Image 1 (cartoon, rainbow, N blue to C red):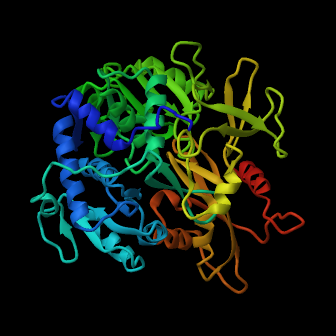
Image 2: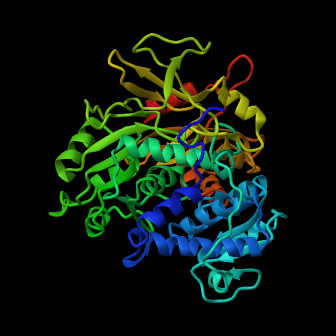
Image 3: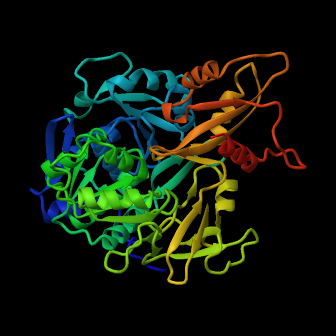
Length: 521
């Protein structure tokens, strides 16, 4: 048997070890638009055990899937660890999702329970109609009894905070995190207990996290980033987390200072929003020692950030599928934040051509990441053997992202995965948007691309060929999309064409559409 750092540890082990070590230390501080609550490690674990016992009483068993449809709140984290303790698997969903988008992961994951809040309840109830496996809905943050739901307080009111031993293995699944791919349907990334443990150790070491640190979390909890980079690393070293109910550019630096945070994780879009705020005397007084970030910003924005905020930056590269950060700028060596850094401890990377052959230095190619499935990289995609087989080959994860590496070992991001649009930190698969547009009776065909946006990374542009004898307007199509897609997936620009440029086998040549769009900008 081969042993790793994650061979004998589960999420329950990780939490209960820290509870035994520092029971009265603050683990979680929550800011709900100015109203603050907090949990020590002991108090948090007590709530987790009560929820775990309630789940068992409700009939949730090992391997069952539980949908968490919540905004940032303590209940999300409590249910996450409660599910882990009983062997259930969390399946978080974007709280901005309309019914149509929510139904697919709820149904595909075979979730039996959904946990939500009052302002999201209607969407969950509508989605439930297409999801026969959903047996119950737990409603958090409410004291009003609503038919067809179980109030959170009632759910745990009679439960013990002592939990019996349950047979959970590190190789067991702990989460299914759905991520948009290049097809019309998102794929469910299987995350094991060992994955969470491995990444928590690897990432916390790369940023030299200690028990004295406090993570400042403004990114949404349903995303891998907040789970991987913030909560799991804090738990790994016995640090603490300050969780904000939402990102606020105008309050960001003051909130970081108020809660004495030392480290945070961001995407390029919120960074641009922060730079767009009026200068404040408190800009350089946040107290943050490090901001991990992903996605390129310009040299001018990088310089402005460092001059204005005095918060050191560290650009990294990671995917939901890679668990940790296989590439990162080093903490103690040369830091080139216009690059995505160098290969990190525990990973191997290659850059290959279309035939899988290594390319020379400074030559663009696809990034491959080597790891152990279920430990240092994802276990696979849930109920999708074909996608798993094409993405993971002989221990190498094919990222689909194009990079180059220079003579000193620093990697530069060149282009993103085919047909993927990055909008304000959200992955948008062009196929998802195209599928909705094609539902409109006036649309004969549709092609969607991303175009540069100085604030949100990319805007979404759709090219439309009208069905014969039909007519419509850009405004009508945008309204149609708004009724079926999350706001960040709705096209902002629509252009009507007579025909698409195509290959000899009929595939739309999107690179030509991008070139045409650039000329017209």
